Length: 598
Image 1 (cartoon, one colour):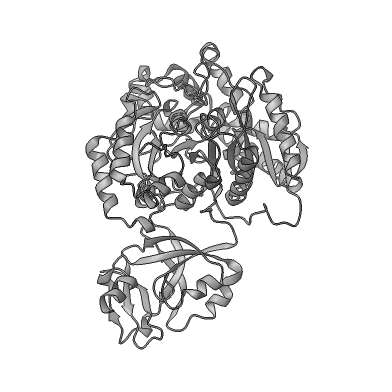
Image 2 (cartoon, helix red, strand yellow):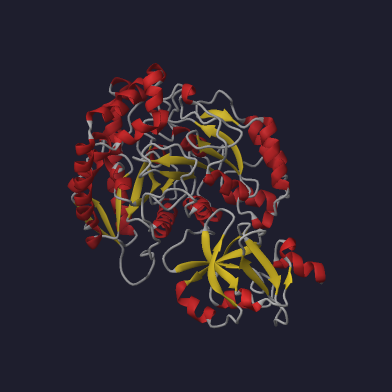
């Protein structure tokens, strides 16, 4: 194809409107990638690419929101067919299974193209601490790309893939976004699956999503929310969105002193961003940053660095010369702390959390510079640790506090360099941040990525949104499916279709005897179960009561386990009500069963 495919809507349009073939498009893209590009650590082999494309043929395009869409992942995330290096060849290993997030994306139809470069062991915000090379800024190669998710940001900013996955502990999913004029969405710790992601600080890590538009980042997050069968270190709950309720002005907190670097035009750009808040009719409230700054210092000047040490302790002992000198120096600070220091730091963080959360009494959301400055490669080379630490001023505190954030493009400075702002909210407010970030991006109307194209009307469609507190995911299995007699009950309650998926293989499906209209019953069994196809919908919680009133015995709403391990509400059946019912589990779903008898 001659036309450049940049966003999810571009790829969807190519398949739906131009009848493009995924094999042709993906193989053309794969062949066009420069294998010496430092943004990549490894590219998909031809054989493994063909395996993915073959699997894609068995998927229903209409049921796969990312059908035939290429993506990349940071090379501290496990994927079958690739080694995981964490930018350290001596550490490299072949994983036995995909990270949960990779599995979910592939089930949605996405095609993994390659794994991207990073600051070694995800330790750094600069993007230069890698034996695989420095990843340059996509606007000016004299400047850094930002890290540690340097490669993931670079390949999105240049339009090589429409989205990529990074990780974020101290800002690694936001700093590179701000430095390359793209979106960096960092979910709340504990809200997304981290199984198969090499830890940096296991208790606060999250993966991050890089995209050209907020709408695309939102679509990807909506497919990845919900943890797997893994240890979860942070309590999480979805919150009710505050944005767009129409009842009052949004109160946006900004740093009382942002002291951004005017040499690169960042202070002027942040001042202009504050003017944009006023233009959007928000209330702007100045806040003191002292408490947040103290939290930020704990991340690298406190015992949390010991979490990084625990990951590579063996390598440090046996082959220390294989570790980047600056990374080694940072991580070896763990030796300065003992158990007493650790508990004292935990106590202090608990105290600071109380003070920090008091911020939300006066404001709904924070807007900060994604980074206060953008250094050159040569400046970082002269002062690698100092320059790196300067970048984390507005990012380091967010995960320690359990908050969520989204970095969005805000301006191109007089020097032609990207400047981004980050909106920060308490944990569980991803839905609200996405709504705010989407409106912000539309208001700014900057070009996408590294001046790829204008921000178009089709990129403004927020087709998929992450969950919020007043949404309940409900799985339907029979007469409420799309096109069946009771589907109107979902439509009447303003339910939004999410996806077609399957239960775990622990269920039996029966055709209920004498049910009008015909309906199945779904039962969980101890052995000999099957995986049954269901449709997922999001129902406003205010509508659940009236919906329950329509459900007749032996059916009811209960909890259903999906094939990805997530539990949702859905239709279940009492065993006492199926005496004369026919077992139809082998059909794999109500839709296939009814097709067989029509």
